[in-house]
Image 1 (cartoon, chains in turn yellow, red):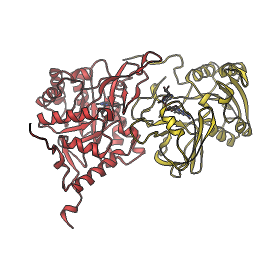
Image 2 (cartoon, chains in turn green, cyan):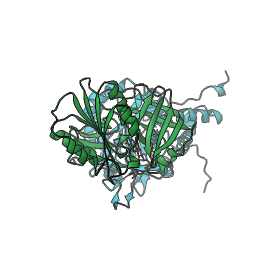
Image 3 (cartoon, helix red, strand yellow):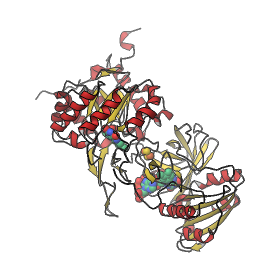
Image 4 (cartoon, helix red, strand yellow):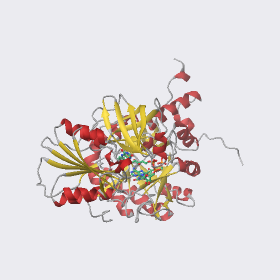
Length: 270
Length: 312
Ligand SMILES: Cc1cc2nc3c(=O)[nH]c(=O)nc-3n(C[C@H](O)[C@H](O)[C@H](O)COP(=O)(O)OP(=O)(O)OC[C@H]3O[C@@H](n4cnc5c(N)ncnc54)[C@H](O)[C@@H]3O)c2cc1C
Ligand SMILES: Cc1cc2nc3c(=O)[nH]c(=O)nc-3n(C[C@H](O)[C@H](O)[C@H](O)COP(=O)(O)O)c2cc1C
Ligand code: FES
């Protein structure tokens, strides 16, 4: 595990446009943001000038370019509502890059990506990195309805094969993405050339994790948790793993499914 | 150079520990310092306090452990920590390299366990003082149970005092009827300083799920929401004790810090604000210095207890 510099920076909004139902893409110019940022890492964004809301909010890096970064977010409460009101030129205080991102081994040849809902957020950055590494990509992407399936054309253009599902059947298969995933995920031989990357609701991740584990396939999942610091100092964001409670903000948010306790929600008490 | 224009003296001495300024960081909001050191140079701080240490590693409470509340947050971490021995072995070497004071916050399930932890730290190079956490609301056994009872407080402090020659700071709980009683009990058994307040016991409910927002139901409230209570308690305690007081509870800026000094604190500690604005302790130091200059003070001590009260 290696840790790169973390910076608190004042970024400038250069774009904040709707891309779907209550969903926006925030583009920030931040020249002093460390260039070491990796796909799967996140930032802690201040979403008020004062104490209400007080704590910072966590967002995956949707993408990272020279001198700028992007966040794909859905308005679900006060902090994200504040974000949706930001206009070009406004300042946003953020800390990052934080946590451990996805691991792309040089031996990797084929990647299965699984996204549920806003779980698509970190994948643009990941797809760009996988493509640069010459990895073939197949994306299983599920959402409630067609309007919530984001950036499909862009991903296809990046050479990703798409398999879609919506709960209302408005696009792709009707049902959950895990069902579609299970249907296609037949006998795959465990190999260093093959890996699953997943991000989305916890139930989905744990199911994907169990399937992968059942066949001994390498699988990384990106988790969420309520966070106070995002830095690793408060111990507030932990998740149960084979090595005890670990910090989603520090040892995660990307964890190997092999190390998570997929059938238990917590560890034994002292 | 005109004397009044020279930089005011910011250093303070608490429990025999000389600190370069009166701004500390609070236990449980600063880890063991490593993460924050990635953001700024910690040698700028007066002191830092590490996460509560126990005799053996602790798993902590099951999640969810935190939840935001108006101008504050609730936590029920349950003192997850690596244990005092791993701290000495794995974390102290890093802390020794930083030119600041290190306070080790400790707790136990019994008075004897407090003493055992204090004893292990006694010989540890790099620890400048021990803060006895007798006020944690988030563990079943130990913690707050000691800090809400005069006799228990006295016993824990007495045993810890015997176990270590290091400066001993006793951290008080606000979850009591009369905090001055507990303060006096700690003083009577040989505490060198007092720190307050720890978090206030609180609760939040998710009405959709009809469940508490924290797994344990209750947790400790911190942040600006508790500042007036903290200020009042620091004021009350500093009037009944000779001991220096480290004030904390909702401090986010220099103005807050100065208010704590005026009511009697000799130094202040920053907790929850580290999460919101990691650099705020540094701004506080500059802000206090500017205030001293502006008000014609030459030393930060001149502010301690300088509150002007109408006589009643
Ligand atoms: C590592 C990480 C990466 C994330 N990346 C993204 C992203 O790229 N895009 C995105 O839209 N969202 C992302 N989230 C979730 C995002 O942090 C929350 O949606 C946001 O904090 C909600 O803030 P709010 O003030 O608008 O909502 P609040 O008013 O605080 O809460 C509204 C609802 O959101 C839920 N919520 C609040 N905080 C979180 C949280 N930390 N995780 C999950 N649910 C939460 C609450 O339980 C509540 O139901 C990420 C979370 C984490 C931990
Ligand atoms: C997440 C969290 C963890 C804490 N852990 C400890 C601890 O281990 N030991 C302790 O004495 N106090 C602990 N505290 C209490 C703080 O040190 C401080 O006394 C309290 O939060 C009030 O200050 P604040 O409002 O500035 O945060 C913790 C507080 C928080 C928010
Ligand atoms: S959010 Fe504080 S340790 Fe992870």
